[in-house]
Image 1 (cartoon, rainbow, N blue to C red):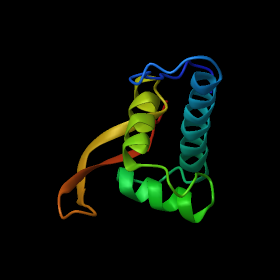
Image 2 (image 1 turned 90 degrees about the vertical axis):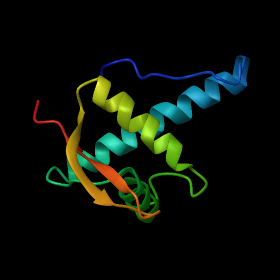
Image 3 (image 1 turned 180 degrees about the vertical axis):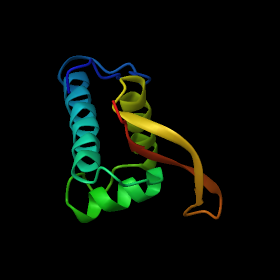
Image 4 (image 1 turned 60 degrees about the horizontal axis):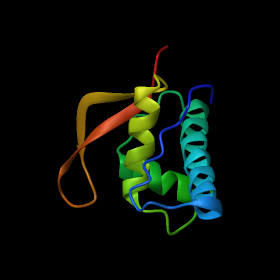
Length: 104
């Protein structure tokens, strides 16, 4: 990834703990982008992204869905991923936005 990823230090981490959290964030962003590049026609909810990454052993099994949402938003802000105006009923019976690889 060429653009700077966003890391939100909401728990005021410092030193090695902060650096490790930033590293994990970079890895999540890169893995999601890698997955979408390998599946360029995929249109997925954040829960489907999480499930696919877990099945491919690309993320830790304790990764929260909120981390996937953060990564998708970061990738969208950087122009890699698009949030569509399409929805799919998701895990909790609610409509979820679909995401896809950007055409840029």
